[in-house]
Length: 196
Image (tube, rainbow, N blue to C red; front, side, top):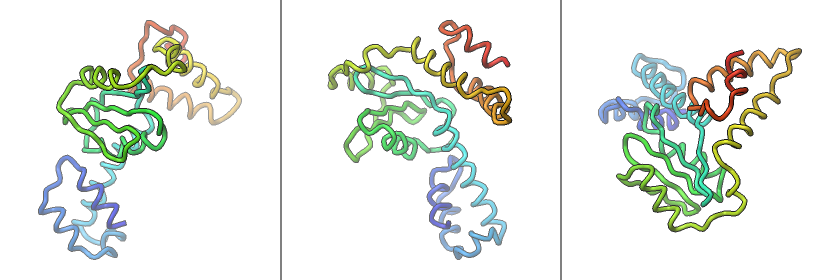
């Protein structure tokens, strides 16, 4: 647990090097049992980082380029979680190039083990990658309109009004509405679903 807390703390936006050094000196038993004020603060800060990462893993909506690129702007990332998030999506979609834009620049990953960073806009990075990659015929027909339809069909399929879990899905759908930018012009019935 101590290693995980230190790893998470190193990505916290407000952590100092002196605080990290103090945590490294604390015995692992104190941290695991939250046995002091400094250990409590360290564990709390690591939860903030992990919560931010988990929220992005669960609710980030990626756009798809026909060149085999998944991309998104991360405007609400509170901590420095770009690299763990890239690694997460890289494992889930190993044949795609993943590109994120944050306030710290562009972060990209492809099939190679390294992660690329650059000070470009997402649009510039996307143009550069698309120039290098051929168009995938399977992705040609996938666009924002039918992506909305796929999402709507999935969300509707999860609602069975006689089940208790449907209340949880409806509750989650309200959260998705707040965290995922939705093109309201493309789907009137999706708006009706989210307003239930």
